[in-house]
Amino acid sequence: MNNSPKKSVAWRELLKRGNFLPVKIAGAAIFIAVAVALSVSNVDYFWKAQELSLFVPSHEFLVEKMQLAGGFLAYCGCFLVQFFYHPWVGCALLIAMSLLMAVLVAKAFRLPGRWWLLALIPSAMMFLSTVDIGYLIYSLKAPGYLYSNMLGLMFASAIFLCYRSIGNRWLKYAVLVVIAAALYPVMGFYALLTLVLCALYEVSLRTEGKKDWIAAVLAVLLAAVVPQLYWSFVYEQMTVFYIYLAGLPRFYMGARVLYEPLIVSFVVFAFFAVMAGRWKKDAGMTAIKAVALFAVFAFSIGGMWYRAFDDENFKVTMKMDRAMDGEDWETVVDCAAGLKGEPTRLMVLDTDLALYKLGRAGDEMFKYKISDTPYKVRSPMSVMRIVGAKALYYNFGKINYCYRWCMEDKVEYGMKVEYLKYMVRCALLNGEFALAQKYNNVLLDTWFHRSWAEKYQRYIDNPDLMDESDEFKSIRPLMAYENILEGDGGLLEGYLVGEMVRLSGGPEPLVELSLQCSLIQKDIAAFWPRFILYARTHDRLPVHYQEAAVLYSQLEKKVDYRMFNIDQTVVDRFNRFIDMSEQFAGIPDGNLKGIFKPQFGDTFWYYYFFIKDLKTS
Image 1 (cartoon, rainbow, N blue to C red):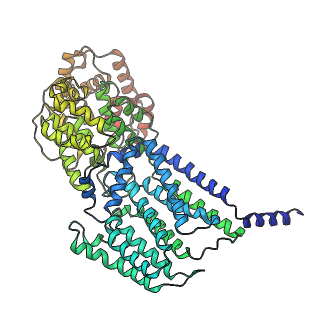
Image 2: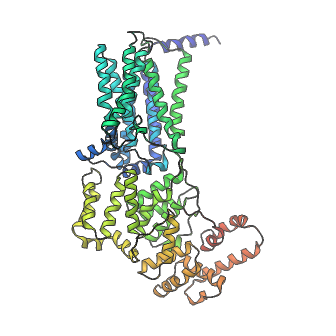
Image 3: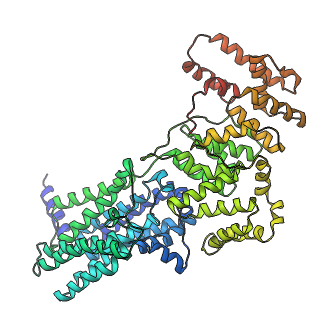
């Protein structure tokens, strides 16, 4: 008790010393630790982000981006996003840029050392905005999104710093005009934000200087009028509704919650602008202020961590997609095997496709989890179609459908690396080598996808080499159907699997894929002719084919399974399945699932009787 007054005095003295370097280091270290943890858990997402972007170091690419206000931010954002091709390089760059932003903010708004932790709030919000959009990364109409808003705030801070250092009032007025007239095309909304920050700074109560209402009014007028002039006389592709929001992402309906990190950053910047002339550099910090500071900082970092999009199925889908891009089908299956929760339909289809590619679908396709868990999305979107259509159609041999969705999504969301890759491959398979060259030329001009383009350039220059490619050899047999373009009605799985079931004859790989799809749809009529053909041409029958043959033989009594090479172990296991069914007769199916799953959850029989009413799209 006698030491408590001394400790209180020591604490107050420590707060007044002004040496806050340890606090700065600790704050930066905490931010880095959380950012690294988020990067680790989202490494495949960040890789996918650069696949869903495009940067070409050319004048034409810059001109294209500058057709809208704020285009330079999009251009710079696309430039930085491409480094996620190597995810750890991209994540390290993102974290470094976030810290640089904090330093710039502290300098621009004169934050004293004791308040430096506040400078990390916008950085935390910008990092959160990169890891909080989930599946919407596929449908986002904002080139360079992962960096464009951060760059906008950094540019605004730098310009505000320059403006604040000007002493001549007439020069200030001229600078405001330059910010509006010259930087609106470059920064869009963020040029207007800079003008507002300057206005707030000019009318705030300051320890030095006087209020300049003329500068404040001029800044506001310029922010209101200049976008209208550009819309009327310069930009032809902008709608009047977005002239003041140019450069910001567009989130619709339920996804508008994703604006919150941006709004928090804008409010913090406005507060900093008001306080820029009021900070007392030499003042100490009371215990109450210190507690409040750390509470705000902790809340910001905590929000960065807890608000990040955290969905196992999304992360596994990203990992599967990355593995499929590299034709690493074993990893796709490993993802399915390691899944803790229940999968989405897209994950089930990707798993079945991987097993087919590995030649193991007939033995394993019902051994992995099968469900129709809803996609965790904030805005209505056809996740199955937007996320999975291109890869599934391509690998199922539906080349025209793959190309179609690449083209339609290009029109809707802009050109992406992913679209270009599939368009090159589709054109090659269709024998359209000049078209393949057109798309491949774009990839040849990129920094990180040039090696991929050079690989496929060999096929463009010498089409005969396609006969030696494992990739093309696996696709071509699946193209042996009437090659017409119909409509899938947006029902990807229903159309794709249904079309495979309706096929009759064809090369052996196509027949087997059709056989597997008949099992998925539980189509007995389609199963038998394909199974009989398969049995005639193969010495060994995969386990699931045998299971279906035994079950259908017992259900219909039309085909005797004993005509085929059915393993006795399969027959014995089926008899145990029947015995258990009779033992628990009368119990509702919902309860039976839990009883049968431990012994028969890896069989076609369990799938046939207990996996029902799946929502396939």
